[in-house]
Length: 328
Image: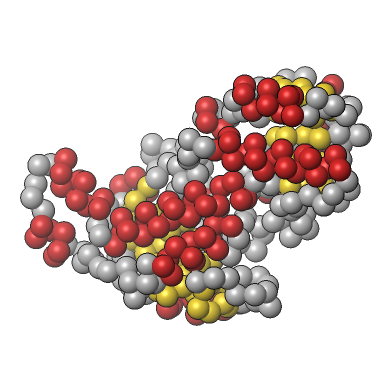
């Protein structure tokens, strides 16, 4: 049995560390583990690989993978893998949503606090050596309390459920939109709305958090119409995927103060180009896709993947299987 690990990224943290591979080889000596740090010549290794650990795979590469039975993506998002040939195949796809979810949720809460307490403005004034007490109170939305505010979640996956628990513990009222309203209401969530009721959620929320998977239904969902449904003193936070927010519409809403502000961790194009008008918006907080960063990232990856690998060898049901038709 062959496991092919192919991970290549410009950001070093996303690349597989050597200890991860050695620990897998020690724990699973019956498996041939092949590692490639790029996709050059990957087709030859795909011919006899039964398991693939990778961020992505192209259709022309997939056609070589005649023995492939399982792909594990060390990401929460899997839209990059859902081309028709793979989506319609019998290959099982799993993801790492439980690796990233709790860490990203902490980032969401940090952004809520930063927006509520006007931390970016304070940091800007500090750089100017300005005692900005009057400015922070009088310029734009005033600092506010978290307790009693309403947080609207778009998505109740690993990120959303953890955000809900954390926010509720801070005294926030949490409401959410999800596709399957018949499912049990998660801890901390006061009310759950169907996707068709998104406008109702937007009109009630002080903070709107986008934490849904990228699908055709969620692509571009935060557009001019949806932004107009938000309260003028509300904030938008996106830790889902960049294409879910119409950046041009958001920039217009922020310039005109149609909404109070926003915080984005994901963007349509990454890295965000230096010429993007988003950089110039004073009521926008930008974090450069850092919500999932943690020193324990690969330890968490190992715990999840090694458990699933044990399950696979034992013929047991895998955890965190993606519904390839739904996209999550």
